[in-house]
Length: 460
Image (cartoon, rainbow, N blue to C red; front, side, top):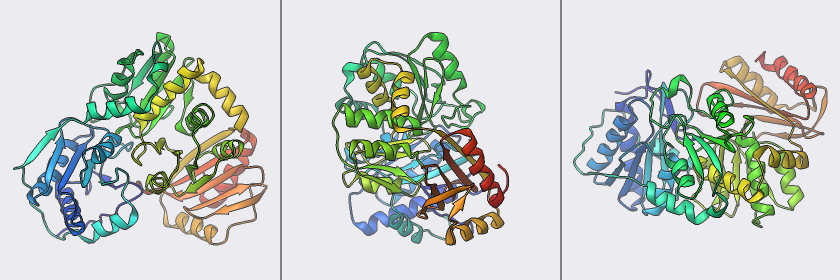
């Protein structure tokens, strides 16, 4: 009998492969997914994909085998495939759902199990709760008798062509960095076939991700920066392990997170393409996006962290949804964050402007007031969790020497000051960490807020 706890977090179930992410538990979850789908009495086709991690394809085959044995028509990708591509494929093939084996941006020792329902986005909490209710206590057998292999790349790239104005891509010089993850070949192929000059680095699957974590951070994209500068490229674009996140380097090597790039993309979509509708941001995303919405007369919605919350809004008319951690999703696509599409739209925006990324960034950051953004993590300790929960129940009226103008408790505790600076404390939904986020106008203000945090939870 299995005793390990399987609980879906902000986006699927993740755990360490040297702990309880193993074939037995993968088969158990796959069985629970099958039972859930049978209870819905829907389409009998299920897709299964996987990333480049150690054993991901093996785990995917185990999940596919269970579903096949439960009489689902099961189709397994023939290569590591990005999460946004699997999500698109669910809708494109009118399948009942998909299973994606990936731990996204987490360290190599982690793996994960994502369930993607028929709408092509993250499973809502009520769905994952029902799946958890079907988890068997004992061992589940697998079987491989009726599993087809498929490759969704051409269909996805065709869809991308329908959504991107490719006329602005011609002549651009881009370095693509999938960071050894499942996105290899996707963005580079798309840009190349439409006239861009593309160099792809780290474009072969590596379960150890070159000794890094597959997350497009400033540290992990240092080699990308060097190659962009030395080759005279216009920019570099990096994706994470399952290509639902992205970041960029400009022609001088400067780093841009998606927390910054959403301003470039949103301003382009609204100002140049005249899109109208609400814009969605997670509680941890830059306040500058709210100021952009106010400037353009748009409604904005703030959600808890976890793209399943943004997905609901995208399914109900939002034009763009952003998460600080690297993900943007779009109302004209499936309700899933997509680092490949985001990279392509960024290239379109820069091609349309006829400017370098640093030049466009200077304009939007000046107009909407992007300051300093800082995020750090602490290991989970019960004492710290208790302090944060006590603060959440009794939020202060002042913090870091400033008056608190707004108190947000939809995900942890966020305190917004009267000058739009803010601090957020929240437990991670995918790792045993407490996350702290700060956005301030300048370094002095950042340090004041950070010192205020240290009084509650200790030093970073």
